Length: 165
Image 1 (cartoon, rainbow, N blue to C red):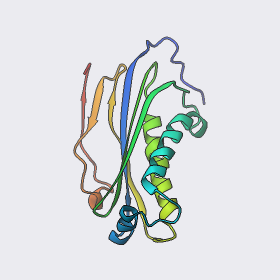
Image 2 (image 1 turned 90 degrees about the horizontal axis):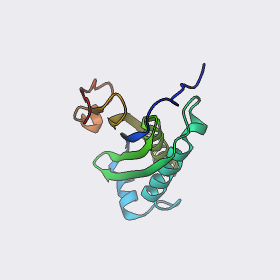
Image 3 (image 1 turned 180 degrees about the horizontal axis):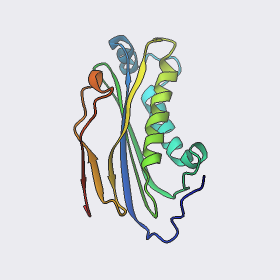
């Protein structure tokens, strides 16, 4: 095993966007919206956990390069059937930030689960996936449209890749 040498690559702007979903009952979503969770503000805690995880990705994922992140934006939005999480990570560096975006979404989803597990044991974390990547040699890549949350597992979503955009 080895960390890939990226020293000869030019620094370019890079962006990655990932998403995930925490499926839960309408009662549990209502509890979030009403602010009736004993541990506190679920959505704020999830956003903060996502930012922290993006910054700590090289400590969590072996062989992942430490990258100076320019920005991390994490959203957690309650809706029908659960909470949708999305993270956008930016840098100007020699390698992409896909792992940081995926780590942000994963930690945000885990935090939501942790804060709500006393109210609902049957929640599930689903559909953690990269949905967009910009920058570097591979150009611009986007995943096709998302399946509805209840159909996301094994959805085999479509992909589209363009160069230089």
